[in-house]
Structure formats: structure tokens, C-alpha cells
Image (tube, rainbow, N blue to C red; front, side):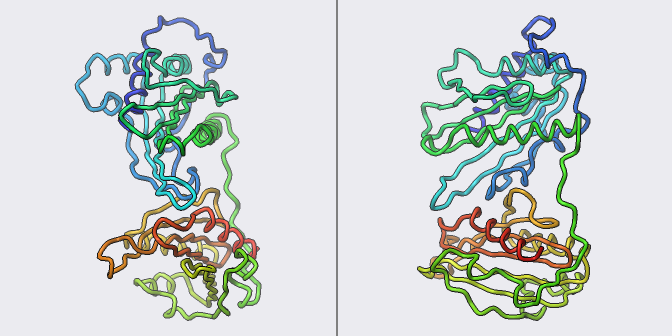
Length: 382
């Protein structure tokens, strides 16, 4: 399906050279602004994706990739004459859980020589004779122009909803692929709106802002640092909570990392679901300074990734900085990786580092639930 989507995009860009050079019928196509940054900096990144997505690939979009690596000299010549300058493509996936089906997202951004070329490319985005493609209405114009369609290959049980949008001299495509009964237009449209916000900030400003780091230290008494019983759904059982030393916390070689951060103290509280299948653990550590907290939380997340966890999106930034990971704790008795799914959110706030971890059976758990708990914990610290 990803190949089909990229093929469509290549056709659209190639077709954009077929129109005779003339003023575009789109008023916004005559705007003189162009993007300043490289496509890799402009295209959606992991933190722009919905909560729980993982990045699978991050590659340049070239004349070769947009013609699927085949020696299509005419197609490549058309792309070049259409004003294709450079591009980028990223793929992401969502593993799925008990409430949301698995899906994959592809994002492609192409920079054209000018807005007129971008407008022609967008107008050419749906080959009219392809029976696999159905144009669908968005109900709004995203950016300077937008179009949406559904791609349903007859040999597949999956469908892709694609939203293409343009802004200044950029055209971008967002495809979400999954089972036909689980995907729709809402998600790629939201990705397109986010992309337009990035492009507008790059060309016209103001820049997209992240929350300013908190300068004042964390002051609550230690036993209040962690999630509380009323932060969890009804029926979850909370532990009494406890203070921890650096050696009690730091497995997997983290003692040096925490010591470098100026570890001072920590408090932890855990919770168990009513059916005892799922646990949540919350941990707050006070360290030497806000600067050390900012580098320390990211270093801890990187250790998890180095040990095989995948980085996942946590949506909008939590605290002064945040990251998420997802991995499987194998069950040795089963002889496979079908064990416990462990998801964690790491964030810093002033002179603190916090970790919230959700452990659930394979196929269960929800990254959205985990992120909501992390935001509740952050609210206790401000």
C-alpha cells in the first residue's frame, strides 16, 4: 500500500508539468513567499504525530524514490521540469491495542520551484481514470489548497485515506493506511493542518512555541511527589508509596546517569488494575538543577531505546521536555516476545525528572491513557 501511495504522488508531480506555463487560476499560487528550511526540518516529526505512533523510516524524497526506483527517464525528466527541488518522506506506525486498530501513516513533502508549480501539482493529484481512487470531500480548505481521496486496492483488505495540501511552494501528502473499517479522513486531515502550521511558521511567523522551562524548583513535600489514588480510574489499588535511593532506582546502568544529574531524592507509587493484569508506576526524582533534569530525562529514555524499546509520540510536550517509549518484556516460559507491553513517558519539570510506566498484557494498554496520567502527574508538580 505504501508503494501505491508513493506511486500516486510521483504521478501527480509528473503531471504538474503537463499544463502550459500560464498564470494559475489559484490566487494564492501567485504569492512570492517560499519556504526557508530544508524538507527534513519542515516535514512532520514524531512529536507531531498522534499519541502512540512510532517512526519507522526517515528518508529524502528524490526523483528516484518518487519513480519507485525504476529507470523511468521520462518520468524523472517530467518531475524535474515540473520544478521539483527536494523532498522528504517519513513513515510511522501505530501497533494497535484493545480499542484502536493498527495503522500506518506516510508523510511526504515536496518543495517546488514556485507556488504556481505547487498549485499545478496539487490539481493533478488524482489520476481520473484510476478505479482504485475515490475523491472525498474534506469540508474545508487546508492551506492554500487541499484535496482528499480514498485508495482501495482490490487485492487488499486495507484502505488508505490521503489528504494532499499545498502552501507557498510546497505540496505535502498524508496517508493513513489500515483495515477498511478502522481508518478515515479525520487523522490525515489533522496531520495536514499540523503541517500547514509548521510551514506558515517557517515562512511568515511567528515561530511555533514550546512552553518555557520552569525556573523555580519543585517544592511539595516528598510524599506528594507521584500519582495519587484519585488520578486512576475507580477500582485501581494504590501502593502506600515509598522513597527510593539511587541504587534502588537505577537498573540497566543508570546509576552513572542519575549521579551526573545530581540525584537528591525520589518518591514512587504504583497501582494495580481491578483485574490485576495491568500496573502503573509513577516515579519523581529531584536532581541538581533544571538543566541537569532536561538532559537527564532524555538520557534515561535513550537508555530504554538502546535496550530495544521503540520511541513513541506523546503528543504535545509535557513539562520542560518529554519522550515516550514502548517495548515488550518477553515471557521466557512462552519462548517468544508475546509477553508484557511496557510503555513509559519521561519528562522534566524544573529540577525534577518523572517517569510514568504502564505495563499491560500484549494487545492491551493504551498510550493515550498513559499520557493522560503523565499530564496529571505534571499538574501536581506545578
